[in-house]
Length: 220
Image (cartoon, rainbow, N blue to C red; front, top):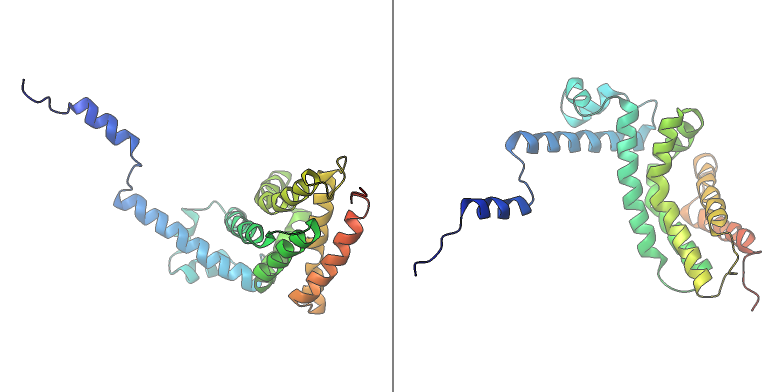
């Protein structure tokens, strides 16, 4: 019996399971988009949101403003794209730093890593906080989605504390998480206006965590 050759249908089925390769045009578009994001991140981190113009972002990326608008509708969409990427990376850094130990020590290790990883981009953080007061509802919802990975680091740590018996079983983990994150965010004002260092922010954060968790600590 002769060997049966692989049929065209089978070949097509196999190729469909593989990740599609980008053609030259698609690959170039991806590279252009990344260049715009990198240039925007640098300017937002140096200047904040308002002073960073599309013209300057385009210049920093080495392209025309038309190329920027071909990838992003406006500066707000570009800012949100930068924020979403950075928040995921920062959350990964914080999660890795949490390590082991008590709930308090894990929280402070994670939050301290957050300060360390973002303090060099203070204008960007200030822009996030400032825009949250004035942006449209839809943009606010997208911003909340972007910061969710960081909030999840706090929530996961608190939930682990409940499972391990360090925190009370009836502890309101969602409320505690929000209070801790709000305190974490508000402390950036100290860095912006009083010149506080990462160490000073972390020390203050420790005192805030102690107050917030005081009623949730298990007494068993």
